[in-house]
Amino acid sequence: MAKIKITQTKSGIDRSERQKQTLIALGLRKLHATKEVEATPQILGMVSKVNHLITVEQLG
Image (cartoon, rainbow, N blue to C red; front, top):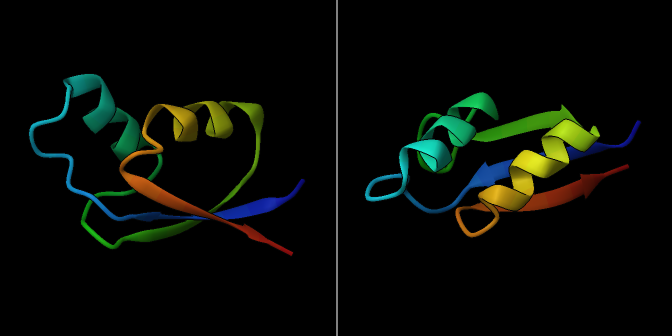
């Protein structure tokens, strides 16, 4: 499976509770936090829900 690097670039303040919980589920708890995860369908679904708050990079 391919890996992706997710970085939180915008705050979760003033967002819906669902978006806040999605950020936490991705492992992003603070601004500019970075996490490397496998690009599973579940993770990609979560990424698409909060794509306006994060930056995604493909890893080799």
